[in-house]
Image (tube, rainbow, N blue to C red):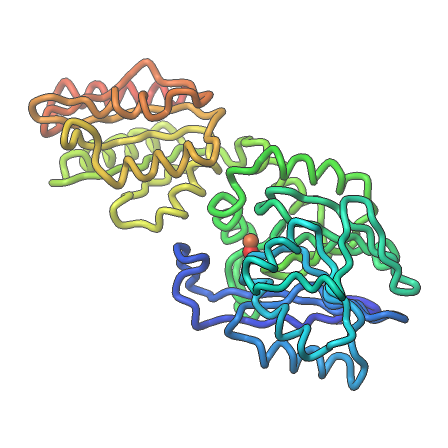
Length: 382
Ligand code: FEO
């Protein structure tokens, strides 16, 4: 029970290998679903396809013989929508509530849009369950176009769809921000402007509890979570520190990176994060780049361009609107170093400030490049 009249009926997934086909989830994943029990009964979203029986059984157990009147579909991504059909068959009198855009997606996924039993809603529409009145809040591109969030004014609960979600099942204790940040920048990060628009709407509501579709229900210290979402979606700097993201083929670029890290620590940098892009989780590296205000990119010239993992990393940043950061570069090239030029070309159009110092290695560190590394450290700490 989340609060009076609201039950949790979601499931934990410890079998999944990659969430959304690309994100490692060492602590699994939760697909949240809720029931609001009033004169009318609403179920909020379904769960992943592999948990049909567990979810329906959770609903049965929570309702003790009563039947739901509505399935409210806030988001059509299959981790939440896969069981709409199963619900519709199990509860033939229940109505399916969604946006028109979600209804179109139902046809695409299931070949049926429930025309005879659907209720289409848009931003600002309400649905009364009795003492609970639900108000729908359009949240387009957070992070799909059909998304609505739902506010229950009686319980002061915001059902926030994927917003405020995180990786990790609910039966594992772990820090919220770490996996919520990786989730946000991985999945929602491109849509900062749209998240800002929803936060503005949410600011007008009296919210005591946030019920997301992933991760824990949030009810204490909501200002902390909303503040982080505000920072993340406005591309602000969350933490003081410097990230060094690198690739190294034979270890020479890595030596320059480690020298820079030592110099920064010696100068009192509060946090130095070093990510080997060929070996670390790319989503973790992306999260770090957005968390801190300064980023050093260190890579090898490769096929007249840059090393593939660095190319992928920069692409991950630019497609998420990376900006408002200071960038330093360490390039390596034995005969024709072009990595710095390539990096700047890839980042063209992003609002970034470059350090005056660029470190150029011609294969391995030498006295000249050591001086450059120290100059870069001084500039980054200025
Ligand atoms: Fe949790 Fe966008 O699906």
